[in-house]
Length: 166
Length: 350
Ligand SMILES: [Zn+2]
Ligand SMILES: [Zn+2]
Image (tube, chains in turn purple, orange):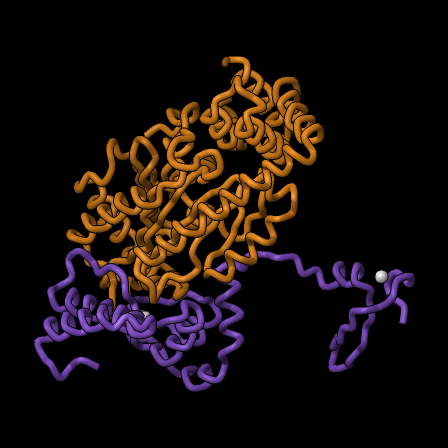
């Protein structure tokens, strides 16, 4: 089969196009296919990533569609169409819908970094605990049991509760 | 503050100093922060917006966040002044194009800038010349701590620093390293870099951030993920990747010198000749010419021009800078003439 674009070279790339529910087979050579598909490596912007993520995880939209933030008044649907939240409280109000989105965006939904400088001792300790647990998991994965035992002891010490060592 | 005072000098990050500064132009980190108790900006009313602006402005100035702080109210700034600040990397394009009460505070050296009421209430930015991730982080970490003592930042143990867009939530941090990669661009190996870097959770962008195209062989590499990794982990990923890219670029340069020395040298000398002789230069063309000459200096072909001069020319020949310099509005033909004569003057002056 010859390439339908240049009519010279052998068609080696076969594409299926769907236009208004009509399937159409198309056949190109390597060179012409390049132009047609135009797969130039382009860095996606965060908003592109968000849009594509939003399109991927749609089932929760129906469930969340009636949810509105009592503080700022933004609805879940407004957030999904604009990609911007209305207030810090939305992370709680829309948690169910946001969790899968955030998981896909960052590969995680648990913060392990800095805490604000004026955060209370409780938050600081909680954060430290999260950090230590993460390090413990990594040590176990790497089969570094000496390090793991050390981290486990630290976690016990911090929690002041030998039972709370999951 | 008179923006005019800035127009014939540049920020310290263009000095061409720091590690690997032949290839790494600058290291930049920004942190996104919001004040607890206020909605994000898309939902803030005029009064709240004004309150946030004044609270942040006063705190930044009182706590002496940087030396000799200037503050520009962007709601009152002219279009050229706003473009000028974008060209200097003191504000983002989005901040320039925004609406309502908003501004930017920056120190005299232009290493530190704080955008108020951009997408988030506060965006802190520190930028340094060369591959200087650690010192850049130390500076921004300290600023964040000082401000965090006086202000209540929106934060949760689960999601970290809460931001208007969930892509920034967590650390709220974006690290960007600007690289000059002419040889990888010329030999088309740059696409391999894009692919490899993508697998590590990093993104490549053009000179002026999101969605801008690559010009002058300048690329920005930054982290895509802000949550689930600590600031230190994110920084160490970037710290380990950049040296691989710079050595790849150096290899590509060596290969070019070995395999097509005549073509390469011809290209570089022609570019240098154009810069010294042309009477009109477009903004597109100047980036290409400067990029070639910069590589010429790096491979030791050209030795009568300072790296700092070249770095600065990338910024000083941009449209708003030329208009500031000339003190009036210029159409694009006039700009091309002024650009060429300005470059000739700078190169002759050495
Ligand atoms: Zn063909
Ligand atoms: Zn809300």
